[in-house]
Length: 88
Image (cartoon, rainbow, N blue to C red; front, side, top):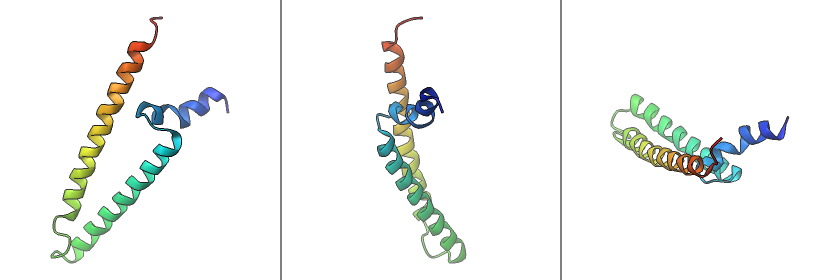
């Protein structure tokens, strides 16, 4: 694997959100854990409607807000990087 391919696969995206590879890995794993718990709450709610009545929806909204903030940060970082690159 070339260094350019390695960088594209493992480093470019984390850098775009001002994270190292390992910071991004930890964030993604925690995010996956939260999604798993939300899914479990939704499954339990489906079987027992009185349990976790608003858990899944409120947690999904919270995740959506968090993702929106990260996307805004990524767009700002990409714009800043684009502005600092010399014109070709």
